[in-house]
Length: 375
Ligand SMILES: *[C@@H]1O[C@H](CO)[C@@H](O)[C@H](O)[C@H]1NC(C)=O
Ligand SMILES: *[C@@H]1O[C@H](CO)[C@@H](O)[C@H](O)[C@H]1NC(C)=O
Ligand SMILES: *[C@@H]1O[C@H](CO)[C@@H](O)[C@H](O)[C@H]1NC(C)=O
Ligand SMILES: *[C@@H]1O[C@H](CO)[C@@H](O)[C@H](O)[C@H]1NC(C)=O
Image 1 (tube, rainbow, N blue to C red):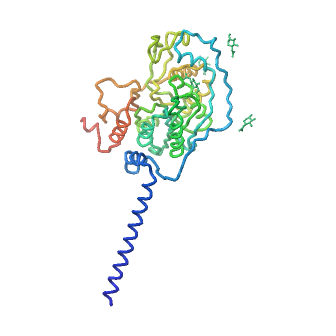
Image 2 (tube, rainbow, N blue to C red):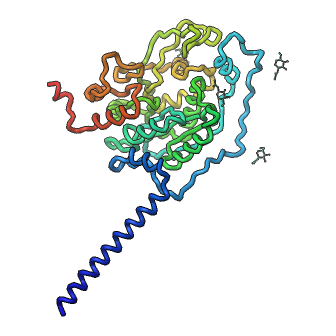
Image 3 (cartoon, rainbow, N blue to C red):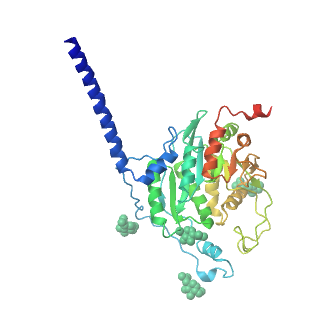
């Protein structure tokens, strides 16, 4: 009798495990069936440990709904008021120069009360691979040495007529998943970057003035967030601070075929005021709010970095040059896979997402001690 009882117990345990396994298997099959194959490969590509890139909950659907009935006044200039010997982009810029306020399409999660560093990164809808890399590496929402770091991406609308709608849908989805998208209703073009700047400034003053410092940058930079936080230990949010790769005595480019061409009709002086490369610079809260107050009295200028320089000049803020901000690139020879170089740096321009991932793992590798290696 004890024997029979025992084997029955074994059988029932076996059965229990068997049904449990079948249940789990069925669940897996069910979930997989609902995920489109493209998302699976995307997911396996970006899931590393707990860095879950994409929540694959299959039932949720996101529909982008344009905010209703925001009316914004803006009278474009009459074509007869615009010099017609200028390139088309310059003419378009001048035509809409007085249009400075556009509706907000997508908003990020609100800023928490205790926010040390806001990473405000200019992106465009198609650059989803860069946003993925940033969210999972140096832009991660985290608390570093007790200081909270938050990430927002700044976007306009895709100017690509064919892809605009699906890209908008993607942004709406990202916005729901990550709540880090801040988007306005103007075309995301090179000459509209200054619009992005002034919209960011007013969003900051209205919605996120508790942030102590702001790092404003492009989506193709690598930021050594830990170094930035260490650097900021010496500064106060309510004193002016503007640090970056500052250029003094830059002259406007007068060659018509270059990207940064500025005709004398748009800017007559021989030199620009000091300004920092737009790839990435660091500001205190006081400076950001000062810029927001100053901007309405400064006419729009198509190059956003220079525009900020123009405002800072009027505010009497001194721009600090820091060698750790390499927004104009690094002198050759330059090995993008040398982690020791990054240990010293704050920001490096022009890394692709793969280089960003690699750098992040190298910079954060505790075993990587450059100083000792060199010794
Ligand atoms: C939009 O605003 C106008 C005027 O302010 C109003 O007449 C109209 O009913 C509004 N439309 C919607 C859809 O709210
Ligand atoms: C634009 O200028 C032309 C010529 O000066 C004038 O006839 C026209 O009415 C103006 N249009 C607007 C919208 O002001
Ligand atoms: C800026 O965006 C506005 C609104 O989308 C658009 O009409 C204008 O052409 C854009 N300006 C430039 C210079 O691309
Ligand atoms: C900047 O300095 C000039 C000259 O010292 C002064 O006239 C001006 O009011 C100052 N501007 C601000 C915003 O403090």
